Image (cartoon, rainbow, N blue to C red; front, top):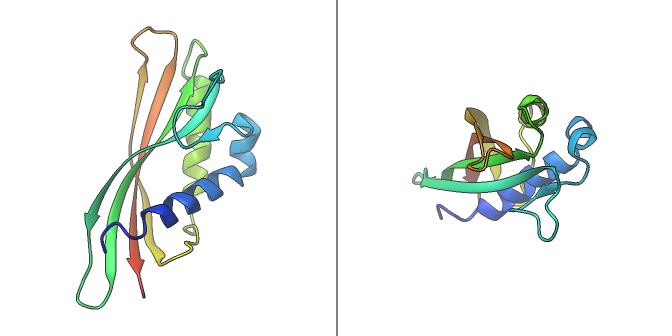
Amino acid sequence: MSYALSHALQQAIYARLTSDAALTALVGHEIHDGVPAGVVPPLYVSLGDETVFDRSDVTDGGARHDFVLSVVSTEAGFATAKSVAAAISDALAGTPPTLTRGRIVGLWFLRAVARRASNNAARRIDLTFRAQVLDEI
């Protein structure tokens, strides 16, 4: 039962990001489940790695999901990427998104790592969030 809500969580996070006016004002529709296919845009958001831990109890299934949202920019500095990262944090703050199955008990920002790509031509910020989910079926 520990991985049962992973897809519902991903859908909810994606829906929240793509419907956030402040974030889409910065990146448009460039929010992807992975690296965009074809010509890579100069600025995009990518849903990334996820680590899941079982948090079930005797009555309900549950899990803790640590997931990464990445901001990638080809601009010379970090200013634009940090603005996008802030918009992501703002979009996920407050009331947690609604899942198609189960519910999010809590959603927290854990950390961010900002770095230059190995070729120094791009900037990347990886934001890690934690969601505690409960499956009440």
